Length: 246
Image (cartoon, rainbow, N blue to C red; front, side, top):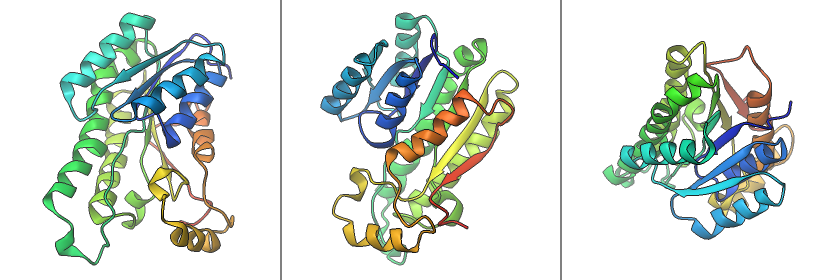
């Protein structure tokens, strides 16, 4: 299904999964807003690649955990493009703290991941809700298999992603029937978060039924399927981990 004439906002799309999603949306014909927090150079590089595909692209810096910045971003998107049809909440943060290191998991770790991974996701959905309802749009939240297993980079991160799954279900109810809201829960993905984690990645690949670790494009493929199809699917979380969570 072509997305020509649609406008998509992808948060945290300068790098990694967000970048892959933004480019795949552009390949489907959608105009794309590349949001970033700190990765300015990468965001503009992503935007240039999108423009080379023949569609319009806008770069916008905003911290998703700042409600005021998020509302200004949505207003700027609608002012520039005249509409917003698709929202992909990809922005996220983590800190690697061993689960058995209870004292090592500090208050600031909790504050950071809950602010961005939960509040930021909600703030962006809330700010975009009216426009998405008007256009019968859709939302895809990038959560994590950690939110389903209780494993992951830290207990706080896992908890934040479990909360994101819950928010997805709640919003699917309150924004229906105009807006579908789903989430995609990746396992380990080869992004810059995995830099220096070679031994872990190799071990993970060997124990995964499909015998490899996901690339960002593997996640994007599922995100796009929930946007361009799956018209009777809402409130669901699709796991993308090569079968590791069976």
